[in-house]
Length: 308
Image 1 (cartoon, rainbow, N blue to C red):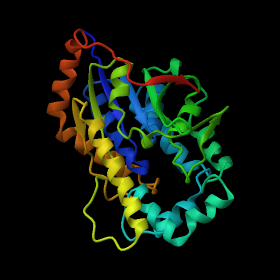
Image 2: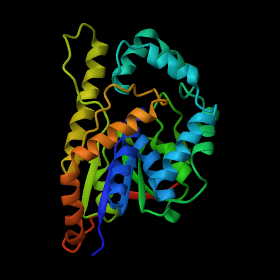
Image 3: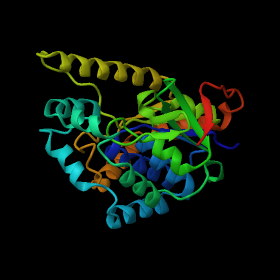
């Protein structure tokens, strides 16, 4: 019987390279996901893997892009990295920018810190000009429609547009505007798209989580600290609830990688490999189970599907 194993790849910017390490271990053991869902960086890497259909071509394409392109504004990312004393996630880093006036100043003069021209150039170079329905593996990218506040699955149309929308961190990258609709990073409504993977047709879903877990904090001295922290708590709790539907959740150790340091792909991939090997007994069990649970698990429609 054919496996109906799904892989859900969460957001986490540069830490998302660990997704490739997990996929590499699966492929080396003749385990190919039948469905892939992704949010933000998970959508980018999952979409590329669904296009190439194998890990070697996916990684080679990514490395060639990173080594040859000038599209990424390295100066801006250096500002981000240098502004912190230790690696933190995007939400925590916003506090640093607010205090220094970086976000506030940019918000008054433009849509995002990274310009639309640079952002489009990144995806024009990185992502093939193909439609999602033509990919080798069924795929969905999760996006957030900011006007209605709706979580959506992009399952048709331009892969490039879907990945741009799913990765558009508000205030940092420009949103994707389609008519009266404004699409931003899918992580604002679903950091770990487990249910979307079931909706694609998976009977068992392995989720890969690379986002930093909520940490203990000290006393708060100003209101802005409370506002940012409250948002982080809400987002963290939502992510916990969404991951509960997964058959297995993998947590590659990527805390040492700065979320904005996109040059550390080798370390990220290595972390994913180590995690998948450590958990391979459970992975193999779920893969075997997915061959027969597909007969008894119905595909439910949780989220509206769209084309971009």
